[in-house]
Length: 160
Ligand SMILES: [Fe+2]
Picture 1 (cartoon, protein in one colour):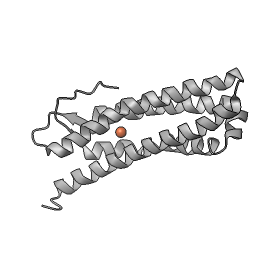
Picture 2 (tube, rainbow, N blue to C red):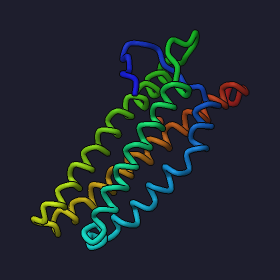
Picture 3 (cartoon, rainbow, N blue to C red):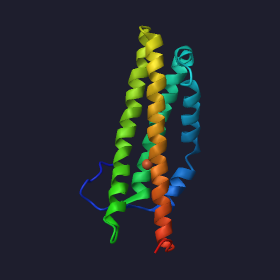
């Protein structure tokens, strides 16, 4: 994952960013499956090995997904870019690091299930923590999809 340069101008390559999203069905399947496991604290406790393995897969999928987006979906120093669009693009690219670290934190928290202490309350917390994480991830994706749409609209002159 690239370290974002917070002073550069940033925009998106809409076609590449869309393509990266379209080919990453495994990631969204995993997010949905984790949503099922975390729908009930009992499931988290009874399937803790599977749960932790799924979270590790999620972290690895996110690392690849974000790296591809940053390598091909975003680019620095475009010749012309609306400053407000640039600010949104930069903020969204910066969110990758925070989301990745959140996924790592979820794994650390889930590893505590192996201690066997306070498993019930930990599982209940993990239900909430995963729900909050997946909401943030989906909001991030929706915001990037909105940027893609706006970039396309600009290219074909909608709203000029
Ligand atoms: Fe992204």
